[in-house]
Image (tube, rainbow, N blue to C red):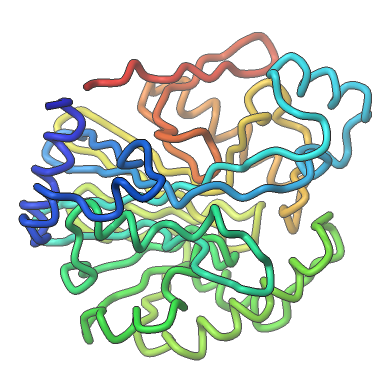
Length: 321
């Protein structure tokens, strides 16, 4: 049995998850070539990265401030198509002490956007044996639709604990009262969909929100810190235990951001600040040598950061299986 699968099953059983589903994952055999989950240990903290699928988007969004020829050359060097490509979507389940924590909630199911290969998180949580009722906390890096949509799927709220705590920066909740899209560069339809999702989310889950200003310890060794940039309340989550560290960077880092950290992503509401945040975070991760996971890095999205002159280099882990 692959070791990563054994570790995933162990996390499922420890976190109050259904062991029978962990032994016989659901969803496989229905077009799923792999379980799309990967387990790691951070000291005494269990971490499970789960793929929410992929989101096809125009490649111009990777760097709308870059020379198109330079962007095209980067795509060519990466063996990526020139017009559009599949953005990975990743979420994380963390077990620390008695708490089971979901870091971001995936895209969900928005029929107006016609994205059938995304929004896989709920199916894959079930495949990993994770019962929604076992989740004690949710930490949201920000309130973009691909990070909150899973909580808006019909029937999900009824499965969650009545005392569920949802941690999000106060600045993020404030921003979505009247969001500014003047510096973004998104495909048609996305701004309206993002506004609608954030509005609905804050209305439906307001009683569960636990806001923080700059930093908050969610569980032993699990700390969420506001960075701003991508959105005013965008946050990253660091897990630290026994000398091990791992940071979930949300949308602070994209695949192109290592070699070209100054390129502006179309979903960034303050792209210049987002670039500054990205550089600071990457320098910090390179200095500490800790592991990094991010929403839109290729699954399982686990690696480290090295400094490469004025830029950075992504060093993916060797899979443990």
